[in-house]
Image (tube, rainbow, N blue to C red; front, side, top):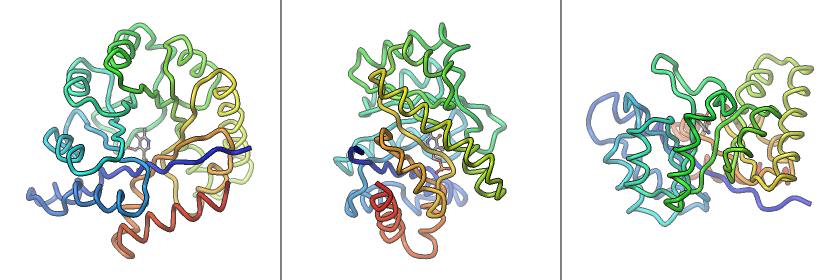
Length: 246
Ligand code: PXP
C-alpha cells in the first residue's frame, strides 16, 4: 500500500536566473506562490554558503508569502544552524556542500560525520524543526541516520538520474533497487524516506512508485520546463506523473 506522495518544489534556480542580472526579477517568492496555487506540497530552498541562488532575505519572504511548509537545505555549519534556528522552517535537510561543485554531488556522509552532525541535529530537533539527512541509499548511512535520531532521510537520486541519461539499463535497475530497498528499510525503522535530485518527467515514475517514499523534491528540471510551459503547467504535469505512478 502506498501512502500519499508529496511534491516539494525547489525554487533555487528561479533565484539563479534573478541573480544573473543582480535585480529582483524573477522573484522566487512569486514562484512559491504559484507552487502553492497549483497544489504543490512544499517549497524547498538551499541557502548555500556562497549565496549563489537563494539569499538570506528570500527565506523570510518565502515563509511570509505562502502557508506551504519550507524545507530549508543547509550545510552542517554553525552559520547555517543559526539561520535555521532564526527562521524556524518546517524542515531542515542537511546536505554536503562543496564550494566548487555545480550542484550537490553525492550524499552526506552521515556515518563519517556523526560527531559533527549530532549537535546540529539535536539543536534543530529541539527547536521543533524536522530534520532530514540527504544521504546515499546505503545501509551504513541509514544506520547513521538512525543513530543520529533523524526522523527523515532524503535519498540522493543523482546516480539513478545519470544511469537514466546514459541509457545504462543495468545500472538503472541497480540504482532503483538500492533506493527501493533502503526506502523499505527506513520505513521499517520508523524513518520517513524522501528522494530527490535530477528527477524529470521521464525518470520520476519508478521512484514515485516506491511505496514507502513520502516526498520528492524536484527543482532544476521544473524550473527549466517552466521556461517553455510556465511553472504552473510544469508543476501540474509532474504531479500527474507522480500520482499516476502510485
Ligand atoms: N533535494 C536536495 C537535498 C537537493 O540538494 C536538491 C538540489 O539542490 C534537490 C533535491 C533538487 O534537485 P534537482 O534540482 O536536480 O531537481
